[in-house]
Length: 270
Ligand code: DGL
Image 1 (tube, rainbow, N blue to C red):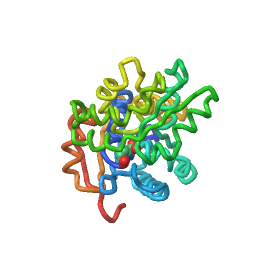
Image 2 (image 1 turned 30 degrees about the horizontal axis):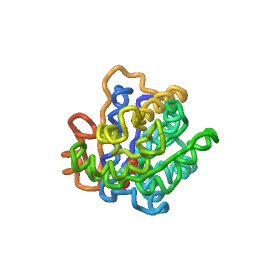
Image 3 (image 1 turned 180 degrees about the vertical axis):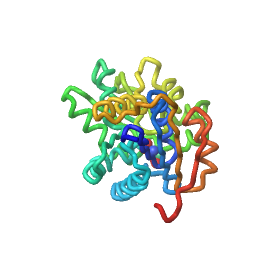
Image 4 (image 1 turned 90 degrees about the vertical axis):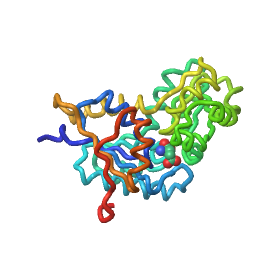
C-alpha cells in the first residue's frame, strides 16, 4: 500500500461539506474519503475567529488518525480564518474553498464586478474580498452575509415563496451593483442556487466553490503524485461529533445520494 491509496480527509462544521464530498466523488470516484462533521458545535458562522481556529485544529487532528494524505477544509468559515494556521501546523497538503471560488469568479467575470455571499464570519473576515481584490485593482467586490440561508437549506426549504422572499431581502443590496458574477461562499448555498438565480436574474453567473474545489484537489494530488491509482470505487466514511440521526436524514439532500457508513466520534478520540 502506498500513500496513493490513503484517504482524503474532509471536514466541515456540520453537514454542509457534503456539497464538497458530492463533487469530489463525482470527479475522483476511486478515492477513499473520511468526512468529519462537527455537528455538535455547528454553526461556525457566528463564532469568533479564535474559536473557529481552535475547532479547525481539533478537526484536523482527528482526521489525521486515519492516515489521510490531504485535508480538505470544506467549510468556508474555517477556510476564511484557519487555513493559514493549519498549513503552518500540519505537514500534509491542505486545501480550502476560498481560493478555488476566487479563481473561478475571476475567470467568469467580464465586467470585473463580483458579488460574494456567505456567513457573517466569512464576510467579516474579508477573506474572499481581499483575495479577489489582490487579483487586480480593477476588480470591484460587493459582499453580503445571508445567515438564514443555512437553516433554510438544512430544513429543505430550498425553493418557494418564503425562501425567495428571504433571498430578495438579503440580495437586494447586490441587485443594483451591476455585478455579473456571484460567489456562493458557504457550503449550504449551492442548494439554494435556483432561488438565488431567480432573484438575481439568470444572466448572473453563480460560482459554486465545491465544483472548483474538486478540480483543484485533483490537480494538487496529481502534482504531488498522491492520486489514487486503483480501479475500484472508493469508500466514504462519515464521522460526527453529535448523534448521527439528523445528519443521516438531511445529509442525503446535500450529498445527492444515500448516506451509509455514518459513525459517531468516540469521546476519548476527539
Ligand atoms: N459550513 C459553514 C460555511 O461554509 C456554514 C455553516 C456554519 O455556519 O457552520 O461557512
